[in-house]
Length: 257
Image 1 (cartoon, one colour):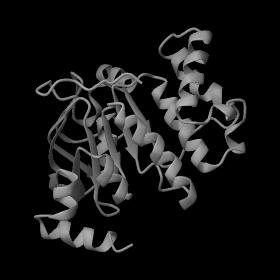
Image 2 (cartoon, one colour; image 1 turned 120 degrees about the vertical axis):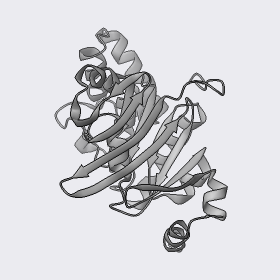
Image 3 (cartoon, helix red, strand yellow; image 1 turned 90 degrees about the horizontal axis):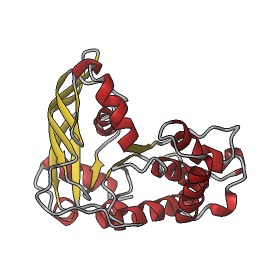
Image 4 (cartoon, one colour; image 1 turned 45 degrees about the vertical axis):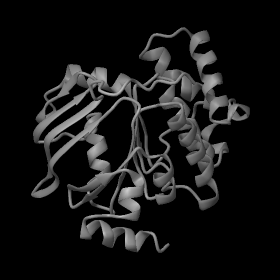
């Protein structure tokens, strides 16, 4: 894969300013201020229910926010879903891999990967198939291309989901706990595929409980507690010398396991 890192000082691909999100009376995101640079790998950690997944789901419009401003690669997202034109553009430029694989069960692996590029990007069938074959090879699953998703393991299905997201040639990849639904022995193969993507320079935001992986691949680790960014920094700084007591308490619990 071509290295897509850009020079330091480039305009950030994601910028969130004073973003607030409510579910009814529950204040899920509180005055989030965050920017992500081109080529940066940002890993978001925190306890369940802290707002991690909601944060990245706001970036591609899967969740509306009530106050603040989000800019994704020059496309503005407005509060309360008032951004339909920008949202369409953002969703063609931002790939997302979820906890569940969300593959079409009646389509082959290859057809799952080619569908959106043909329908949305207007690729010819040959172009889409060539791209799908290359991407399935990249995530080490080319030999399963003619099977249905139900014939694959969870780890294999998640790698298909990754190939499907990459087929849209995204400028940013979002991962929402992509290994949390997998059996332990399958986690490594998905993390390996993500690690290769990070090494190639893809801009990535990753919500994960895999702390060893976070330490290894992240340029920056962000710890969220009760909807607020409590601490952020280089992995070695956050993991080895956290400054906030809440960060220390969280890491003290999760790193024991």
